[in-house]
Structures are given as C-alpha cells and as structure tokens.
Image (tube, protein in one colour):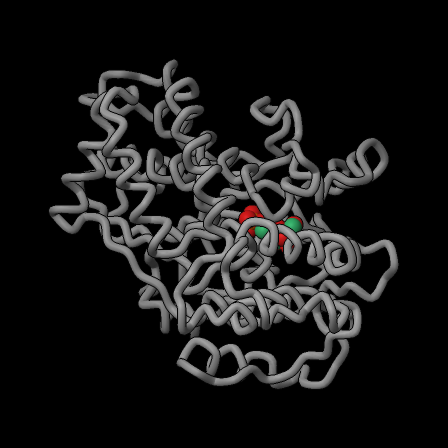
Length: 384
Ligand SMILES: O=P(O)(O)OC[C@H]1O[C@](O)(CO)[C@@H](O)[C@@H]1O
C-alpha cells in the first residue's frame, strides 16, 4: 500500500492553514488576556509574525526540550507552512513554553480556561450522570457502554478548538453521530483481560471528569485490571491534562460529596490508595514523534497491554498524521504492532481510517466539514 504524505498546512483552504493563521493568534491573545500581571515580556510570537516562523532548535534547558529538539531535526529552518502540520503545532506549543519561561516558573498559562472548564464540568456532570445506574454492585455491559460513550463525548470539550467557535456542536450525544462503535467487541475483549490498561488522557475539565468516571467503571467491571494514566509534561493544546490538572480534578471530585452516583469517587479514592491507579508522564508527549513500537516501549507499555487512546491529537500520533483515505483499513495504517487499542475520539482534524467507502462519499457530499467540526465520534477498537 502507498504510504500517503503527512497532512500539511500549505494549502490555503487546509485546516492546518486555518489553525496557524486564525487559531494560533487567538490562543496567544487569550494567554495575554488571561494572565494579566504575569510576565509575558518574552512572548514575542505575535510580533515576529506566526506565518513567518521557521522551525528552530529551542534552548535545551531540560530533557523535555532536548527530546523535542531531536524530533524536529529533519525540519530545521523550514517555514511553519512547509513542515508537517503536526510538527508545526508541537513547535508552536513548545515555543510558547519557552517564551513564557514555563520551565523556570512552572505557571500554567492556560489554567484560567482549564479551571473554568473544571468548575463547569463539575456542575454539568451531576446532571449528565443522574440517569446512570446507581447500583455499583453489579456493573453491566450496558453500563460500560454508557461510560464509553460518556468519555467519547467528553472529548468534545476541547478548549483549543471550541473557544474559537464559542460553542460546541449540537446533537453531540445522538448515536448516529458515532461513525464506528466497537463497544461490544471491546467489552468482549476486556472481560477476560488481565493486567494494565494504559489510558492516554487528553483534555482536562469536562473530558477528564468523564474519563475518571470511565476508569471507575472499568475498575469495578474487571477486578483483575489496573489503570496507568498518561498525561502531558507541559501545558499544550490549551486544555491537555498535566499532572497538576489531574490532582486538581481528583480534589474537585472528592469535594463534591453529593455528586451522583454517590460512590464513584470512593472507587477512585480506594483504587488510588491501593495503587490500582497510577499516573505517569514523559517528554515523548510534547515531542513531535509519532507512536511506534519503540516509543510504546519507552512509555513502558508492554506488548499486548491494552491502550485506551483519548482524543484527536493522540489519534493523529498513532497514524503519523498522514493523509490516509478515510476508508483505509485501520490495521493497515496504524504505526504500532504491539497492542490492542481502543480509540475514543471526536473528529477534529483531517484524518480518519476504517470507514466504509460509501460512508465517506456520503459525508463528503452532505457535510463537507465532517472531519474537523467535532460533530462525529468513534469508538474504534484495533486488535493489531
Ligand atoms: O484535544 P484533542 O481531541 O486531542 O484535539 C486536539 C486537536 O485539536 C486541534 O487543535 C484542532 O483540531 C488539532 O490540531 C488537534 O488534533
């Protein structure tokens, strides 16, 4: 099979071009707006002009930057529109961290937005969970399916995308918006799974709360599994979960004693105490490398261990952010060979695999923005 080129932002009407020209300046302006009083003197990214940025090595103050520098080496001195869009985005977020001196002051310049999203999430979540089963003694397959859907749509709440649009898409919870639903195949597999489930987390706020709910359900449904949650080492893509966000979120859940169903926070708390849930991060996550067997090994994911992969960016990493025709079989495009993977993702960028050709043709005609508008989701289980 021909391997397609990376997704790029060179085309005037590409999503990448729109992101670099419209979304990046908005993200920088939001940082300035939300960090009044903080030292943003070195935030010169806008003055220099984002469109004129060239990929360059950053000051290697720690292992994180050093790995990032290695990952962009093939693209040095190239213009931001000339490199793969994936590389361009990671460069933008690393440059922000450098200019905002994150490595020295540790201040998360996206925290205002993230904290607002967390308190909104805690409000919303009680209502959304109300119809869920209250009897946690008997976790049923239906309950697991519900939790998968809940965590899938949690991925809609991406602040980098929808702060610009000001609203998330409508109709997001209707089942016809799930283009692939392998929930049952996943549950069949999970039933007899023994070992660590690696959860590659995505956004903080609403999404992380929904992910923690899913984690609680999985732990109860299968007493022989443990969870290892992987988070980002620096603030990136506006709302991506860092260690600090994880801790704040768990604290916020513990504070809301009345949140139904009453006992899911106890499940989390005791699993944390018993070390059935652990947390980790790695410089890989803020590098421009894609997933491969090598990188899974670096992340201590053993061959055969189950991965739950949240979100759009992580999906792009698994498929090297290439322009795969959307009807490419998933197993043919995925870059790793060692793990069963469950992808829970709402579509927010120009990549997709595993669809029927007729579905793809229909969507292109009826909804030209179906890949990027965040209206569609997938629960896609790959057993490769
Ligand atoms: O939070 P998620 O689901 O990974 O989405 C991040 C995605 O959002 C975007 O910033 C906009 O689509 C993409 O560039 C990126 O893939």
